[in-house]
Image (tube, rainbow, N blue to C red):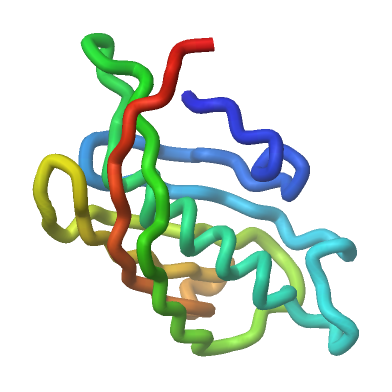
Length: 129
């Protein structure tokens, strides 16, 4: 799995990853909340971005240095979240070798959709460390 210090700091964990889809998990903590006691919109945006992005590539033994960059991301905030575990499920919906499209949904423990997103992403190769 790619190293991502920002996601480590946020507390997001990759729970499932396979070709074309992934799932990220985050347990809401006090530092994730805004002044109204709800999950900060930027945390939601980050979860939507990584769920979409990781759904578009999967580390293969033949090329472990592929990553994605966000071209565009549209988010629809549907409900607020204040506590519990969130699950961000992303799936690749189309595209080609370099540009792909993906969508994601963020759910709370009760199955309520907190947010939905769709976007376009570019695959790129990175240099090995």
